[in-house]
Length: 157
Image 1 (cartoon, one colour):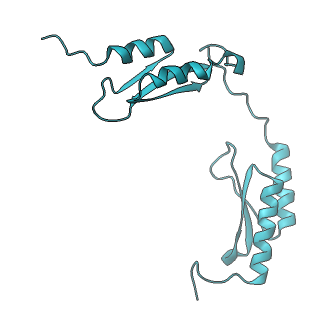
Image 2: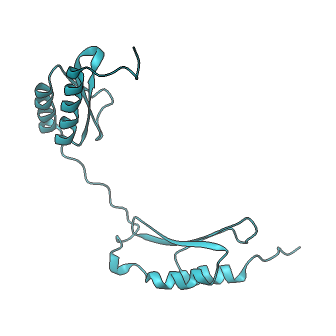
Image 3: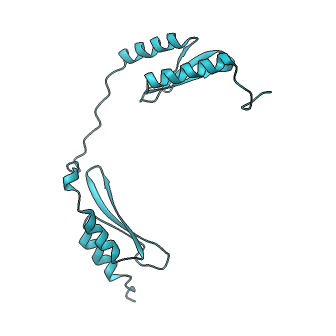
């Protein structure tokens, strides 16, 4: 029997368990056991050169290599802060009941609040093809309600 349906030998099963234990001990690494090469391989999940692969015949030796690599690894650079404004705190978020009240007035739309990198955006999207406008995105809930209330205006000739 060959291929994925082949049963693991007891030795391979033990090696896979050791690989899983290494991954648990070092969550920034993907650790595998390569049966046909009889070796463990570890690849980082953090930014590193694509060729970064640690290889060892034993789990203990691979553990030592990972620790040695991490000691040489430069500290992670902080993520750049954008000048787009302050990060929103939970107290800065709007009252969810307010959005629910507006949503109740427009059953033909799905309404939700999207918060990303300090910006909040209210989004309304038509539940079907007939509603106009189809999608509205704004940072003002009153504006969202006004646009949906106005509905589709026929363009002037």
